[in-house]
Image (cartoon, rainbow, N blue to C red; front, top):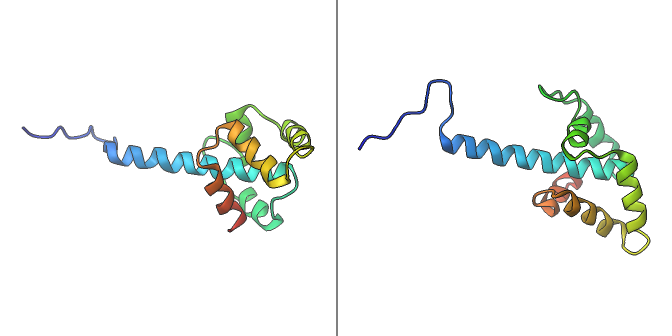
Length: 115
């Protein structure tokens, strides 16, 4: 039996899976950066680099995160403030990322923080 060729202009299934994983990792990275930025823990040089990026579907990286999760900086800061009453700042950030459903949040935090 011969394998069915993908339609012209479409990607093979393996490429689509890779794209989905890449998109998920990017969203996770941007989400981790967004939370860190909202609570004042993102390095200014990293924020500046992120702010210089351009996207076809969103004007800015932080707006993509806000639109995807329907959150605001005020929301993140409020949850962070409540969390830090009982947890350390790193635990509070992890709590927020887990709550947002950030995939592999610990790895994304390490990437954003350069650990």
